[in-house]
Image 1 (cartoon, rainbow, N blue to C red):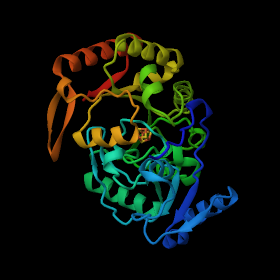
Image 2 (image 1 turned 30 degrees about the vertical axis):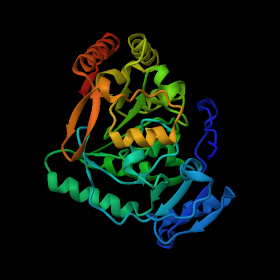
Image 3 (image 1 turned 90 degrees about the vertical axis):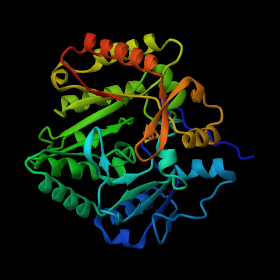
Length: 353
Ligand code: SF4
Protein backbone atom coordinates (compact mmCIF):
# COMPACT_ATOMS: atom_id res chain seq x y z
CA UNK A 1 0.00 0.00 0.00
CA UNK A 2 1.48 3.35 -1.01
CA UNK A 3 1.91 6.04 1.61
CA UNK A 4 0.56 9.48 0.82
CA UNK A 5 3.10 12.29 0.67
CA UNK A 6 1.61 15.09 2.80
CA UNK A 7 0.45 18.15 0.91
CA UNK A 8 1.68 21.44 2.35
CA UNK A 9 -0.99 23.29 4.30
CA UNK A 10 -2.11 26.44 2.54
CA UNK A 11 -0.50 28.75 5.09
CA UNK A 12 2.94 27.40 4.13
CA UNK A 13 2.31 27.65 0.42
CA UNK A 14 4.85 29.67 -1.51
CA UNK A 15 5.45 29.84 -5.22
CA UNK A 16 5.52 26.48 -6.95
CA UNK A 17 8.96 24.91 -7.30
CA UNK A 18 8.76 21.53 -9.02
CA UNK A 19 10.78 18.57 -7.84
CA UNK A 20 11.57 17.28 -11.32
CA UNK A 21 11.78 19.05 -14.67
CA UNK A 22 11.60 17.48 -18.13
CA UNK A 23 12.27 19.21 -21.45
CA UNK A 24 11.44 18.25 -24.97
CA UNK A 25 14.60 18.90 -27.00
CA UNK A 26 12.71 21.29 -29.31
CA UNK A 27 11.54 23.34 -26.36
CA UNK A 28 15.10 24.45 -25.76
CA UNK A 29 15.19 26.15 -29.17
CA UNK A 30 12.58 28.68 -27.97
CA UNK A 31 13.56 31.66 -25.78
CA UNK A 32 11.02 30.67 -23.11
CA UNK A 33 12.37 27.11 -23.04
CA UNK A 34 15.91 28.31 -22.60
CA UNK A 35 14.85 30.77 -19.89
CA UNK A 36 13.05 28.01 -17.97
CA UNK A 37 16.06 25.71 -18.32
CA UNK A 38 18.27 28.37 -16.78
CA UNK A 39 15.73 28.98 -14.02
CA UNK A 40 15.55 25.24 -13.22
CA UNK A 41 19.33 25.05 -13.19
CA UNK A 42 19.56 28.04 -10.83
CA UNK A 43 17.06 26.31 -8.54
CA UNK A 44 19.27 23.21 -8.53
CA UNK A 45 16.46 21.04 -9.92
CA UNK A 46 17.12 17.70 -11.60
CA UNK A 47 16.68 18.21 -15.36
CA UNK A 48 15.71 15.38 -17.71
CA UNK A 49 14.97 15.21 -21.41
CA UNK A 50 11.88 13.59 -22.91
CA UNK A 51 10.98 12.89 -26.50
CA UNK A 52 7.41 14.10 -26.03
CA UNK A 53 5.52 16.12 -23.43
CA UNK A 54 2.67 13.66 -23.97
CA UNK A 55 4.66 10.69 -22.76
CA UNK A 56 6.53 10.89 -19.49
CA UNK A 57 7.24 7.41 -18.33
CA UNK A 58 9.22 6.15 -15.36
CA UNK A 59 8.29 8.89 -12.90
CA UNK A 60 9.54 7.85 -9.47
CA UNK A 61 7.24 6.76 -6.65
CA UNK A 62 5.98 3.62 -4.97
CA UNK A 63 2.48 2.75 -6.09
CA UNK A 64 -0.17 4.81 -7.85
CA UNK A 65 -0.82 7.38 -5.14
CA UNK A 66 2.76 8.36 -4.62
CA UNK A 67 3.36 8.48 -8.38
CA UNK A 68 0.37 10.80 -8.68
CA UNK A 69 1.69 13.12 -5.96
CA UNK A 70 5.11 13.25 -7.56
CA UNK A 71 3.62 13.82 -11.03
CA UNK A 72 1.83 16.89 -9.65
CA UNK A 73 5.20 18.28 -8.65
CA UNK A 74 6.80 17.51 -12.00
CA UNK A 75 7.15 20.20 -14.64
CA UNK A 76 7.30 19.28 -18.32
CA UNK A 77 8.36 21.96 -20.76
CA UNK A 78 7.20 21.31 -24.31
CA UNK A 79 6.00 22.65 -27.62
CA UNK A 80 2.24 22.83 -28.19
CA UNK A 81 1.59 21.10 -31.50
CA UNK A 82 -2.21 21.29 -31.67
CA UNK A 83 -3.01 24.90 -32.30
CA UNK A 84 -6.75 24.47 -32.78
CA UNK A 85 -8.32 25.88 -29.63
CA UNK A 86 -11.17 24.09 -27.87
CA UNK A 87 -14.42 25.88 -27.18
CA UNK A 88 -14.91 27.17 -23.65
CA UNK A 89 -18.58 27.91 -23.07
CA UNK A 90 -20.16 29.60 -21.21
CA UNK A 91 -17.38 31.87 -20.00
CA UNK A 92 -15.52 32.39 -23.29
CA UNK A 93 -15.44 31.44 -26.95
CA UNK A 94 -12.10 29.62 -26.85
CA UNK A 95 -9.71 27.99 -24.42
CA UNK A 96 -6.21 29.33 -25.04
CA UNK A 97 -3.68 26.59 -24.30
CA UNK A 98 -0.62 27.88 -22.45
CA UNK A 99 -0.29 25.18 -19.81
CA UNK A 100 -1.85 21.88 -18.72
CA UNK A 101 -2.07 20.38 -15.26
CA UNK A 102 -1.86 21.87 -11.79
CA UNK A 103 0.20 21.31 -8.67
CA UNK A 104 -2.73 21.79 -6.27
CA UNK A 105 -4.90 18.98 -4.90
CA UNK A 106 -8.52 20.10 -5.04
CA UNK A 107 -10.41 16.86 -4.54
CA UNK A 108 -13.16 17.71 -7.00
CA UNK A 109 -10.90 19.06 -9.79
CA UNK A 110 -12.08 17.93 -13.23
CA UNK A 111 -8.49 17.75 -14.47
CA UNK A 112 -8.28 14.44 -12.61
CA UNK A 113 -10.38 12.81 -15.26
CA UNK A 114 -9.58 14.99 -18.28
CA UNK A 115 -5.81 14.55 -17.86
CA UNK A 116 -6.06 10.83 -17.15
CA UNK A 117 -2.63 9.36 -16.72
CA UNK A 118 -0.86 12.69 -17.34
CA UNK A 119 -1.34 14.73 -14.18
CA UNK A 120 2.06 16.43 -14.46
CA UNK A 121 2.30 20.14 -15.13
CA UNK A 122 3.06 21.18 -18.70
CA UNK A 123 4.12 24.61 -19.94
CA UNK A 124 4.15 25.33 -23.69
CA UNK A 125 7.03 27.47 -24.86
CA UNK A 126 5.80 28.34 -28.38
CA UNK A 127 3.77 31.24 -27.06
CA UNK A 128 4.29 33.20 -30.30
CA UNK A 129 2.47 30.46 -32.28
CA UNK A 130 -0.33 30.43 -29.70
CA UNK A 131 -0.70 34.23 -29.85
CA UNK A 132 -0.68 34.14 -33.67
CA UNK A 133 -3.49 31.55 -33.64
CA UNK A 134 -5.50 33.70 -31.22
CA UNK A 135 -5.07 36.67 -33.56
CA UNK A 136 -6.51 34.56 -36.38
CA UNK A 137 -9.56 33.56 -34.32
CA UNK A 138 -10.15 37.21 -33.44
CA UNK A 139 -9.92 38.17 -37.11
CA UNK A 140 -12.39 35.45 -38.15
CA UNK A 141 -15.06 36.65 -35.72
CA UNK A 142 -14.74 40.41 -36.26
CA UNK A 143 -16.64 42.58 -35.46
CA UNK A 144 -17.77 40.25 -32.65
CA UNK A 145 -15.60 40.25 -29.53
CA UNK A 146 -13.72 36.99 -29.03
CA UNK A 147 -12.99 35.93 -25.45
CA UNK A 148 -10.21 33.52 -24.57
CA UNK A 149 -10.10 31.57 -21.32
CA UNK A 150 -6.55 30.77 -20.21
CA UNK A 151 -7.38 28.55 -17.24
CA UNK A 152 -9.32 25.65 -18.77
CA UNK A 153 -6.61 23.07 -18.36
CA UNK A 154 -4.44 24.58 -15.64
CA UNK A 155 -4.13 27.37 -13.07
CA UNK A 156 -1.70 29.60 -14.98
CA UNK A 157 -1.27 32.21 -12.21
CA UNK A 158 0.44 29.54 -10.13
CA UNK A 159 2.92 29.01 -12.99
CA UNK A 160 3.48 32.60 -14.07
CA UNK A 161 6.76 32.99 -12.18
CA UNK A 162 8.13 30.18 -14.37
CA UNK A 163 6.46 30.83 -17.74
CA UNK A 164 5.58 34.52 -18.04
CA UNK A 165 2.86 33.39 -20.50
CA UNK A 166 0.02 35.37 -18.95
CA UNK A 167 2.01 38.58 -19.16
CA UNK A 168 2.54 37.93 -22.86
CA UNK A 169 -1.17 37.26 -23.44
CA UNK A 170 -2.31 40.24 -21.37
CA UNK A 171 -0.07 42.65 -23.29
CA UNK A 172 -1.14 41.16 -26.61
CA UNK A 173 -4.83 41.38 -25.73
CA UNK A 174 -4.45 44.98 -24.53
CA UNK A 175 -3.90 45.93 -28.17
CA UNK A 176 -6.82 43.90 -29.58
CA UNK A 177 -9.96 45.87 -30.19
CA UNK A 178 -11.94 42.65 -30.58
CA UNK A 179 -10.05 40.29 -28.27
CA UNK A 180 -10.43 39.70 -24.54
CA UNK A 181 -8.61 37.46 -22.12
CA UNK A 182 -9.90 35.91 -18.93
CA UNK A 183 -8.59 33.42 -16.47
CA UNK A 184 -9.46 32.14 -13.05
CA UNK A 185 -7.16 31.24 -10.22
CA UNK A 186 -6.86 29.92 -6.71
CA UNK A 187 -3.36 31.33 -6.37
CA UNK A 188 -2.22 34.70 -5.16
CA UNK A 189 0.99 35.16 -7.18
CA UNK A 190 -0.28 38.16 -9.11
CA UNK A 191 2.72 40.49 -8.57
CA UNK A 192 4.18 39.96 -12.08
CA UNK A 193 0.85 41.06 -13.61
CA UNK A 194 0.22 44.25 -11.68
CA UNK A 195 2.36 46.66 -13.69
CA UNK A 196 1.36 45.41 -17.15
CA UNK A 197 -0.49 47.41 -19.74
CA UNK A 198 -3.83 45.55 -19.94
CA UNK A 199 -6.19 48.22 -21.27
CA UNK A 200 -9.04 46.63 -19.32
CA UNK A 201 -9.08 43.73 -21.82
CA UNK A 202 -8.23 41.02 -19.28
CA UNK A 203 -10.61 39.96 -16.59
CA UNK A 204 -8.98 38.21 -13.65
CA UNK A 205 -11.31 36.04 -11.61
CA UNK A 206 -10.63 34.37 -8.31
CA UNK A 207 -12.15 31.07 -7.42
CA UNK A 208 -13.56 31.42 -3.91
CA UNK A 209 -15.74 29.37 -1.63
CA UNK A 210 -17.16 28.93 1.83
CA UNK A 211 -14.45 28.38 4.41
CA UNK A 212 -15.64 24.79 4.94
CA UNK A 213 -15.09 23.95 1.26
CA UNK A 214 -11.66 25.57 1.10
CA UNK A 215 -10.47 23.84 4.26
CA UNK A 216 -11.75 20.38 3.35
CA UNK A 217 -11.34 20.16 -0.40
CA UNK A 218 -8.65 22.54 -1.70
CA UNK A 219 -5.23 21.52 -0.35
CA UNK A 220 -2.24 23.05 -2.07
CA UNK A 221 -3.96 26.29 -3.14
CA UNK A 222 -3.48 29.80 -1.71
CA UNK A 223 -5.50 30.52 1.41
CA UNK A 224 -8.75 32.42 1.13
CA UNK A 225 -7.18 35.48 2.78
CA UNK A 226 -4.27 35.47 0.32
CA UNK A 227 -6.59 35.08 -2.68
CA UNK A 228 -8.72 37.97 -1.55
CA UNK A 229 -5.70 40.17 -0.91
CA UNK A 230 -4.58 39.35 -4.47
CA UNK A 231 -8.06 40.23 -5.78
CA UNK A 232 -7.74 43.65 -4.14
CA UNK A 233 -4.35 44.14 -5.79
CA UNK A 234 -5.52 43.32 -9.32
CA UNK A 235 -8.62 45.50 -8.87
CA UNK A 236 -6.44 48.41 -7.76
CA UNK A 237 -4.24 47.77 -10.82
CA UNK A 238 -7.35 48.48 -12.91
CA UNK A 239 -8.13 44.94 -14.09
CA UNK A 240 -11.79 44.00 -14.36
CA UNK A 241 -12.37 41.60 -11.45
CA UNK A 242 -14.60 38.60 -11.06
CA UNK A 243 -15.29 35.76 -8.68
CA UNK A 244 -16.19 32.20 -9.47
CA UNK A 245 -17.94 30.47 -6.63
CA UNK A 246 -17.28 26.86 -7.48
CA UNK A 247 -18.00 24.20 -6.69
CA UNK A 248 -20.99 25.31 -4.65
CA UNK A 249 -21.46 22.55 -2.12
CA UNK A 250 -24.47 21.64 -0.01
CA UNK A 251 -23.24 20.86 3.50
CA UNK A 252 -24.64 21.39 6.95
CA UNK A 253 -24.47 25.11 7.56
CA UNK A 254 -24.03 26.11 3.90
CA UNK A 255 -26.27 29.17 4.22
CA UNK A 256 -24.03 30.70 6.89
CA UNK A 257 -20.89 29.60 5.04
CA UNK A 258 -21.84 31.35 1.79
CA UNK A 259 -23.24 34.42 3.60
CA UNK A 260 -19.93 34.74 5.43
CA UNK A 261 -18.03 34.36 2.16
CA UNK A 262 -19.89 37.27 0.56
CA UNK A 263 -19.51 39.53 3.57
CA UNK A 264 -15.77 38.79 3.65
CA UNK A 265 -15.52 39.64 -0.04
CA UNK A 266 -17.36 42.88 0.60
CA UNK A 267 -14.85 43.85 3.29
CA UNK A 268 -11.90 43.37 0.91
CA UNK A 269 -13.00 44.37 -2.57
CA UNK A 270 -12.22 48.02 -3.34
CA UNK A 271 -15.40 49.99 -4.16
CA UNK A 272 -14.05 51.02 -7.57
CA UNK A 273 -14.16 47.36 -8.66
CA UNK A 274 -17.86 46.92 -7.94
CA UNK A 275 -19.55 48.34 -11.05
CA UNK A 276 -17.82 45.81 -13.32
CA UNK A 277 -17.63 42.97 -10.79
CA UNK A 278 -18.90 39.62 -12.10
CA UNK A 279 -19.84 36.38 -10.40
CA UNK A 280 -20.04 32.93 -11.96
CA UNK A 281 -21.79 30.25 -9.94
CA UNK A 282 -21.15 26.57 -10.52
CA UNK A 283 -22.77 23.89 -8.40
CA UNK A 284 -20.82 20.75 -7.59
CA UNK A 285 -21.17 17.97 -10.11
CA UNK A 286 -19.44 14.68 -10.71
CA UNK A 287 -19.40 11.85 -13.19
CA UNK A 288 -19.14 8.19 -12.29
CA UNK A 289 -15.58 8.17 -13.62
CA UNK A 290 -14.63 11.21 -11.53
CA UNK A 291 -16.07 9.60 -8.43
CA UNK A 292 -13.94 6.50 -8.94
CA UNK A 293 -10.77 8.55 -9.46
CA UNK A 294 -11.42 10.84 -6.47
CA UNK A 295 -12.11 7.91 -4.17
CA UNK A 296 -8.83 6.30 -5.23
CA UNK A 297 -6.71 9.45 -4.96
CA UNK A 298 -8.28 11.12 -1.93
CA UNK A 299 -9.69 8.16 0.00
CA UNK A 300 -10.33 10.23 3.13
CA UNK A 301 -12.17 13.00 1.30
CA UNK A 302 -15.46 14.16 2.82
CA UNK A 303 -16.75 15.11 -0.62
CA UNK A 304 -20.33 13.86 -0.89
CA UNK A 305 -20.85 11.95 -4.15
CA UNK A 306 -23.96 9.89 -3.52
CA UNK A 307 -25.76 9.33 -6.83
CA UNK A 308 -28.99 8.57 -4.98
CA UNK A 309 -29.11 12.11 -3.60
CA UNK A 310 -28.48 13.77 -6.95
CA UNK A 311 -30.13 14.48 -10.27
CA UNK A 312 -28.64 12.95 -13.40
CA UNK A 313 -28.01 15.46 -16.14
CA UNK A 314 -27.39 13.97 -19.58
CA UNK A 315 -24.21 15.14 -21.26
CA UNK A 316 -24.11 16.37 -24.82
CA UNK A 317 -21.01 14.35 -25.54
CA UNK A 318 -21.39 11.04 -23.76
CA UNK A 319 -21.24 10.58 -20.02
CA UNK A 320 -23.73 12.61 -17.97
CA UNK A 321 -23.16 14.31 -14.63
CA UNK A 322 -24.72 14.19 -11.20
CA UNK A 323 -25.83 17.65 -10.08
CA UNK A 324 -27.98 18.69 -7.12
CA UNK A 325 -31.70 18.04 -7.31
CA UNK A 326 -33.75 20.96 -8.57
CA UNK A 327 -35.00 22.07 -5.17
CA UNK A 328 -31.48 22.09 -3.74
CA UNK A 329 -29.98 23.78 -6.80
CA UNK A 330 -32.67 26.47 -6.66
CA UNK A 331 -32.12 27.04 -2.94
CA UNK A 332 -28.37 27.38 -3.46
CA UNK A 333 -28.78 29.72 -6.42
CA UNK A 334 -31.34 31.95 -4.74
CA UNK A 335 -29.53 32.22 -1.42
CA UNK A 336 -26.15 32.98 -2.94
CA UNK A 337 -27.61 35.48 -5.44
CA UNK A 338 -29.32 37.23 -2.53
CA UNK A 339 -26.02 37.47 -0.64
CA UNK A 340 -24.24 38.77 -3.72
CA UNK A 341 -26.72 41.58 -4.35
CA UNK A 342 -26.99 42.45 -0.65
CA UNK A 343 -23.25 43.08 -0.63
CA UNK A 344 -22.63 44.16 -4.22
CA UNK A 345 -25.82 45.71 -5.64
CA UNK A 346 -24.04 46.74 -8.85
CA UNK A 347 -22.40 43.38 -9.58
CA UNK A 348 -23.50 40.99 -12.34
CA UNK A 349 -24.13 37.26 -12.07
CA UNK A 350 -23.01 35.84 -15.41
CA UNK A 351 -24.55 32.42 -14.92
CA UNK A 352 -25.44 29.64 -12.51
CA UNK A 353 -24.89 26.15 -13.80
S1 SF4 B 1 -6.39 24.94 -8.34
FE1 SF4 B 1 -7.88 24.57 -10.00
S2 SF4 B 1 -6.73 23.40 -11.54
FE2 SF4 B 1 -5.58 23.29 -9.62
S3 SF4 B 1 -6.27 21.38 -8.63
FE3 SF4 B 1 -7.53 23.07 -7.83
S4 SF4 B 1 -9.34 23.10 -9.16
FE4 SF4 B 1 -7.75 21.91 -10.22
